[in-house]
Length: 392
Image (cartoon, rainbow, N blue to C red; front, side, top):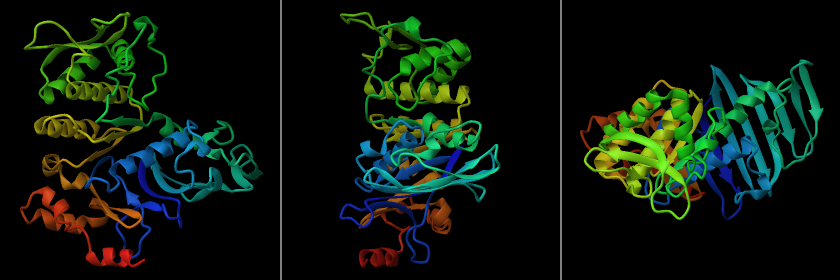
C-alpha cells in the first residue's frame, strides 16, 4: 500500500497552528501534498523537512496502535489521507482535539466503511453486508482494531503503520546497540523494522533465511558507495567487560576485523541502512521507509551514490521511500522528478513538486542551471501566493 497524498494540521485556529499543504491552486490553499514511490524533500533549515517525516511517523504509530492520542505532543491535529492498495483508492480522515477523536472516516473507492464523530459512529460489517452503529472509547482509532471477519478492509491500513521504517541518518542507527545472545535470534521471529537499533538481529535473520544472496547484496551495495569490504557478519565485540555481539566487516585494505564500535559513524550508518533496506526488499514487505538527513556524515560522493543506489533498488518495488536533505551538492545530482521543495510561510509548510508544478520544473530544466538554483532562487514560488498568505 502506498501513501499517495496527505494534508495535516495541528492546533488549527490556535497560536501554534501549523499545517502541511501542497502548492496553492489558483490562489486557494489547503491542497494535499502528493507523494510518489520515490521522494526527496529539500528545503532550508527550519522549513518543515523533519516535521514532515515526524508527521508520517506519528501517523504510522497511531494506525498500528503503538501510540495513544493522549501521549502525543501534538494532541490536537487533523489528517486527510489518500492511499492506493492494489488499484483501490483508500481515503482516511482523522481529527482529534485534546487527545479525543472528533472525526474518523474511512472509504474504499468512494464507498463508506466507517463514519464516526466524538460520540458515536457507523461501520460496515462484512458478514451482514451493511453498516451498523458502534460506540468505543474516543481515545482509540477504530481502524487500529481489526476484526478480520467483519472489518478485514482495515487491515492494510494497520499493516502499513506496523511496517513503516524510520531512519534518522544523523543519529546512531543502532551503533550503540548490541546483542547479548546471538542464538536467541530465530529465523521465524518477528522483526520490527520501525526503528533501526536491531540491525544485528535483522542481519542474522536475513542471513538465515536468504544466506549468501542476502550477504552479497549488502556487499555489492557497500561497494557501490565506495566501501570496499569482502566479508560481513555478526561477531563478538572487542574489549567489552561483558560478552556482546554486533556487526563486523573485513575491509580489503585493513588487516583484521573491524567491528561496529570501531567503524566510522558514516560507514556504520550506511551499513545499517543497507542491511535493513535489503531485508525489506528480500522479504517483499510492502512498506514506507523514512530517511531523515540522508547522507549526513558521508562525503558528497558517497551521499550521492547512496541516494542513487536507493532509487535504483526501490524502482518497481512495493517499497515507498521519503528522504530529506539540504545538501546542495546532493540536490544538484538527484533528478527534479523526485523533488519536493518545502517552503515556509506563516503557519504553513507548502510543498512544490513534480505533481503540482511540473511545468515550472520542466521549464527550469531548459535553463541549464544547476538543480540547486531552482531551490535557492525560489523559481517555483508565485509571489502572489506568498503575498496572499501573509495577508491572512
